Length: 325
Image (cartoon, rainbow, N blue to C red; front, side, top):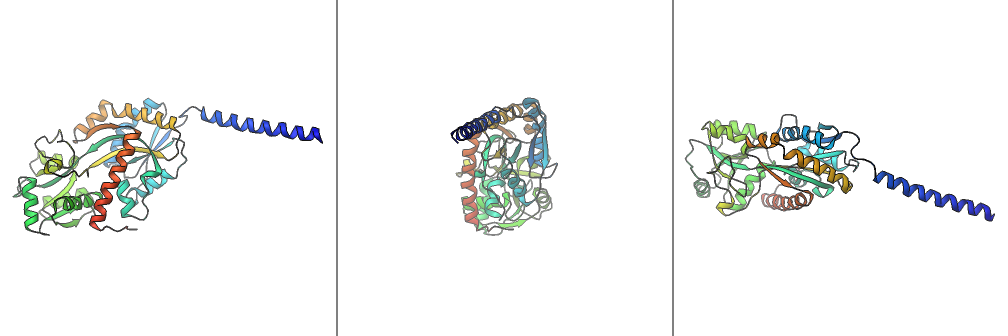
């Protein structure tokens, strides 16, 4: 009996040892050994996809495996972000995020909190601009706002869809300045441009990458931009901050992984993405669009996501937006 107990004890100790050894071996596993997936919430050809595609070859070169772009559209981004949040936290599933990540948490019933992710890196920001036609009577943002204050509800602002990021951004301008616009929803920034060109709206809030060709063609005038500093592509255009309010409602792109991803794997991904965003190709891509390539590591992006969450929630509460299906 004693011999049997002793044998059982030895087997138990051996089992524990093998379990610990297997855990140690897993921790020492080389990463990555297979392609990583870049989950994109938007359709091919859109800004987010193009941004990731510009980084893609440089990521692959830096990390030593393929980086496969997977477009998972729908739900304003929520389908893709929920997919990433629920993926195995092993570093092989990476998601691209933008301000809509925090917006959809409050404007849809399927949104996912940024707290469900571990940040990797922030790569670029593209300011939004308050835009009017070149032949409009408003030469400055102050003139535009003064007119809107004197004529509540008379100024018509085209937005990219009810509850969409730039609709909420326009409401943020109302909150910051005390004006009241009439918001007209369209299906995206492209139709907003068409509406402005056709005289069906007085103004809009759109990312400057979309607006720059029209500014160069003398079709549009940008009155103010949402960045903290003046944009290099529009050095004569004042910022919101210069007008006395700080409203960071432009587009930006960062990358995240599911919560609980091992820190060494996050570091490996971070290092590869940092090399990629510092490539001349990526910088040149955004120079044409007025995009500011700017680095934030995991801690910086985590703090920025928290800041963005507070900003957008404040505007959403002010505007009385309710979650949609």
